[in-house]
Each structure stands twice: as C-alpha cells, then as structure tokens.
Picture 1 (spheres, rainbow, N blue to C red):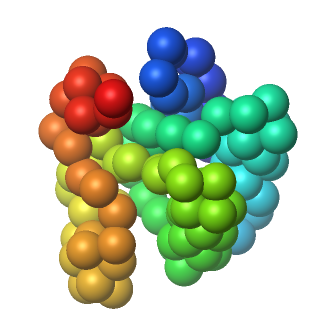
Picture 2: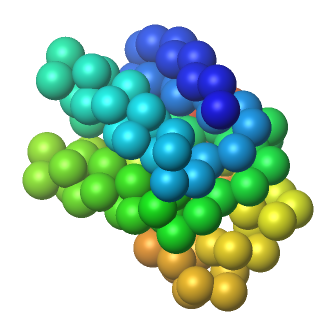
Length: 111
C-alpha cells in the first residue's frame, strides 16, 4: 500500500494506492493521525486506486472518522469502486461515510 497526502485549503486529501489489509491499515491510521494532530478536521480519502480493503482496513476508516467527529470534522471517501465498494456495501458501512465520485466533488462540499 502507498499513501500520499496533499493539503488543500479546506481539507487534506489522503490518496491510498494498493491493498489495505491487516498489515497496512495501521499505516493509513498513522498518516491520518499526523494531519489530525496538525489541526486538520476534514480528510478526503481518495480511494480511486484502492484495490482491496479488509476488515482491519474498515476498522481504520471507522477509527479515523470517529476521531474527526469529535473535532466536528469528517472523513469523506472519494473514488470508491470495484471490490472495495462492494465491501463497504456488504458491511453497510457505505451509509456511514459521505461518498463522492472524486476529490474535487468532496472538496466542493466543504464551507
């Protein structure tokens, strides 16, 4: 898994490439925590290059969303497709997160 973060004016985009599983889920959480500790309250997870997500990956998304919620922020998901989208739908977690077609659309919703 590879993670790249880009700071925008109203959010930080965290682009995840590859597979998010038990071995790599903590890496995603740590990358998000760095930005949360710097004061970021809105994160956009760009999942357009995510190929697979395990239950540990789902747990990481939930943990970050919960941290941001306590700061009146949110974790938005963009570009969700294929197998990862199916996993979010099967686990019914799709209804918990704001989902957008791309990062530009997610960013445009922030005030």
